[in-house]
Image (cartoon, rainbow, N blue to C red; front, top):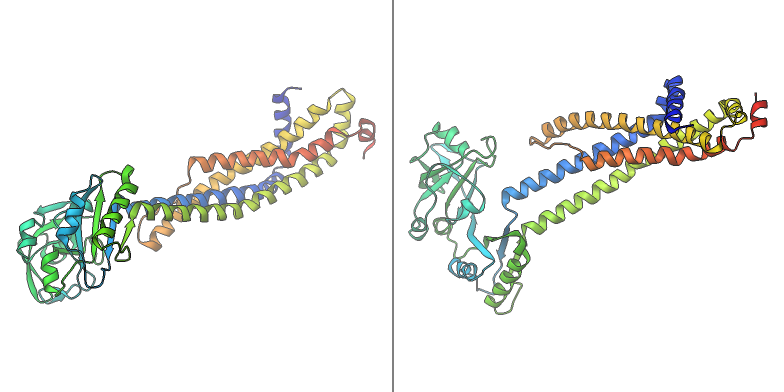
Amino acid sequence: MSIYESFSMALKSIMSSKVRTLLTMLGIIIGVAAVIVITGLGNGLENYISEQFESMGTNTLTVSIMGRGDRMISVDDMQEIVDDSEYLDLMTPNVSLTGSIKIGSDTLSYTSGSGVGEEYLEINSLILSEGRNIQYMDIKNRKNVCIVGSYINLGYFGGQGLGETIKINGRSFTIIGILDEQDDSTEGSPDDCVYVPYSTLMRLMSMSSVSSFTITFVDSDVADEAEDYLDTALTEYFSGDDDGFNITNMADMLESMTSMVDTLVLVLALIAGISLVVGGIGIMNIMLVSVTERTKEIGIRKALGAKEKYIMNQFVIEAAITSILGGILGIILGFLICIVATQVVTSIMGETLNVSPTINSIALSVGISAGIGILFGYMPAKKAARLNPIDALRYD
């Protein structure tokens, strides 16, 4: 008997007991759907984390300066370290604003304010829609100028903010540049921001030194070399004391985060996979019942000359088809849940997170479904193949 005939007989047997077959497949359907949703959620979360880190720059090193005693590093000295390296590229100081931002009588409570250098926009891939960037002379002369996000421009100046003024800690600043919209131009979003020359903000806040720098390296292939160089240079600057600073590599942080997500998804997928084993046991039990119900049929076929391998093939194929059909239905159910989950998670988070399974997870689910069908169908098939034809014909 050919594989095609075995396949055809297996389908007829499955279709003759639709409800029982569906109940048999239930464990496989739930298991595959759970694996699809979990891997989809993990994939979506990984993409979301990657996008967030890319917005901050994955080719950046963040340097926090604690100092050695009273000694801190100046911006000029840090710039010299960067300029002397073949691995490092751009550098900007970062000074966080403490105080108030006002436009007229309105206080901007959720607006983020920072003192930055002239290369800040390029480092963070920010684009100006109007006006100009902060320049060297603005920093040198500590000018009261600023760049604002699109929310401030649209919400307070009706899109005509260039040249207008805002007050930071009671001092007037002229708007020289407006950033392109990054998010949705709402209060507290990335578009609700103000950037001023770091030197101006340091004077305004009576600061004597900068404690945070962002530095880029020329290429991701030299990330380790860039970090090692910077670490060595700063250690020498602080007379061999490496406790005076801390370097954070954004690429390493991204790798650590994605590794944690992958581990969590793997653990959850393995837990969900338990239902696949339960589904396989269900298939085995039903196939054993099917062998018992069809004992006389097996006896007749063996009496007519059917070999053991043909009987065995028929039941193994039947178990595999049942499992594969369950896997396909599980994939469809998983995709439907992923679509709903994307809408629910996005509405809860307020940000887009696509719950999207990978092709590998789908292929793996189908493969596991087929494997479970063959594995758990083997014992009932073996029992059917070894039935004595005389005893089988007498079975009632």
